[in-house]
Amino acid sequence: MEKNSTVRFMIIDDDPINNHICSKYIQLAFPGAYTISFTNPQEALDHIQAIYGLPLSAETILLLDINMPGLNGWEVLDRFAKFPDEIKKKFRIYILSSSIAWEDKNQADKHPLVSGFIEKPITIEQLQDLFPNLKKLAVE
Image (cartoon, rainbow, N blue to C red; front, side, top):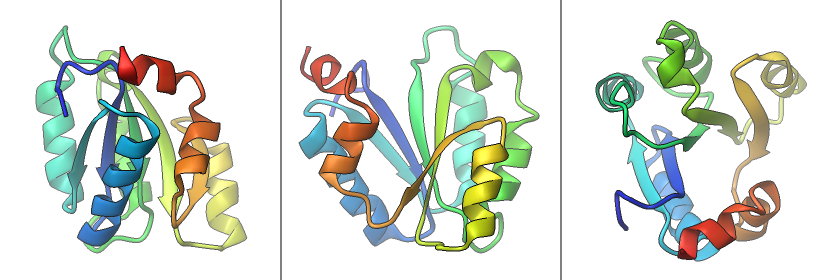
């Protein structure tokens, strides 16, 4: 995994097993993609604020769980919304959740920072269908 990859993913989920599986599937779907995961949402927000304010930081796809202790996914989005536009524009955020609640899907659809809702468990096929242009970029 190279930090200079043109394909970058960040996973924020309190479940380390899910993070590991997601990272492996991302690598299988997009060989060479860079992935980083956080089980602590506040650490992820601190990382985003520190790294993505730099001019050379790359666009990243963020997979965000909803149900987490401490800060849940909606609270992460509330804090993310307060970041400068130069940081926010570097992210495409997708809710990644095992929630089957209609309210969660509806809230994700209406949220201005959320690009989509993905049900767990994620699959390689889902990743490739959601991001068809990334396969070519990952191997360059």
